[in-house]
Amino acid sequence: MKSEANRLLFVVDIAGTLVFAVEGATAAMRANLDLLGLMVLAFATALGGGIIRDVLIGDAPPASLRDWRYSAVAFTGAAVVFFLHPFVQGVPGTLILVLDAAGLALFAIAGTQKALVFGMHPFVSMLLGTITGVGGGTVRDVLLAQVPGVLRADVYATAALAGSAVMIACCKLRLPQAWAAVIGGVVCFLLRVISVWRHWNLPRVMG
Image 1: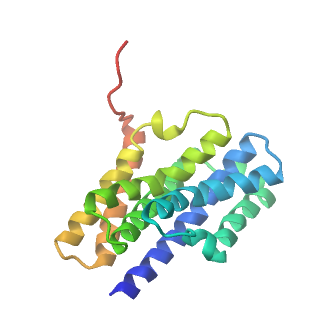
Image 2: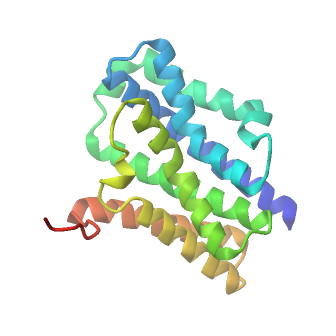
């Protein structure tokens, strides 16, 4: 059962890494950074959240630094953006939103799953799943000297938190791990997409 969980975790992690690498490289391209800047932002966006998660749960060195495939996937995503930038610039905003929501869901579920494998409390696992989902984007925004989107965007971290909570609830109900991951990921994805479509936001202090 543990090997199945580890295999599922790896597949989801790699998929999320590719999606967020492309997103980070795209942000670097729009900020007019050079090739090195593009590679750095792709790496930070794709792997930053996972590295923070692994440090917090004591899995050191982080998995993404022990396994060369993570870095290879991140740099591959950056290379795709660099060499196919005319195509990337023409990608509709709706598709970018969908890919971002997919990456958020994949990382939130992967982070939650890994925290559970390491014996973390379910509530802590939810938080670590959320950190995995939003950590890389936060690092990216800081490197671009921007207020992190997670602190100002429509429902984002909340979507990751909800997806993680649903996944854990499904596990408590003894659903197969694969099904729990899929259900949690779908909840996160749909909540993120619908929140943008319906312009949902968390309450703010009214001055």
